[in-house]
Length: 229
Image (cartoon, rainbow, N blue to C red; front, side, top):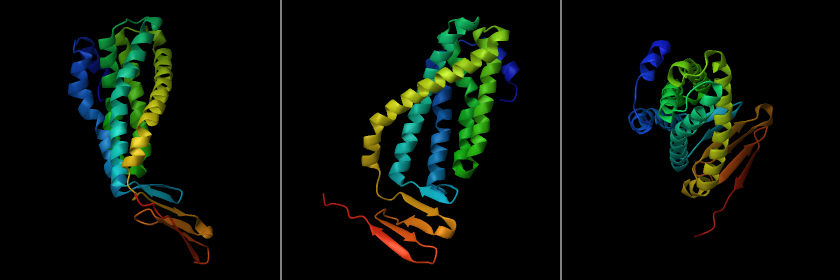
């Protein structure tokens, strides 16, 4: 992260297999973001423009696990795209090298996931993600042999293609895991919304009551009754 040009030259001479890099490097680092987001969500919740949301413990755990699995799968998918496109931009067809390129380039993004501890600082995480793109750009020539004049386009096309694939994978993952996540989530997700002069809305701790407060302090309670099992 601090001296990418020199470090990529060293990485280019390595021969670690994707499995070795994945288990030794990706598995621990990829956990930073999901775990930090879980802790931040439980401690601070999420909020913007007067809206706040605090997920329940089970919802947080389900989200953390899904996010972690997607982060791990994402490295393999992006590496596949990077390797597939490399020969088209003057580079070589070498999946292990492509995996090393992607895994190490994503270091900034994975380490930057620590800002999830304070959800309000999420924008900083975007800066780490952008820096990961820069690291990928710097490593494309020494690791994959991509033609120097084609590196910008190679980087851009790889990012776009990988993004589309991740969207599809995310949609499939959501379709598969959403039912179990809903079933696992308890009724303790908490939400509140400050509507300024129009009043506010809040849910109870157990999620069964919503209280709407009007501009003059009048209140309306909406009760949700759960059917007996």
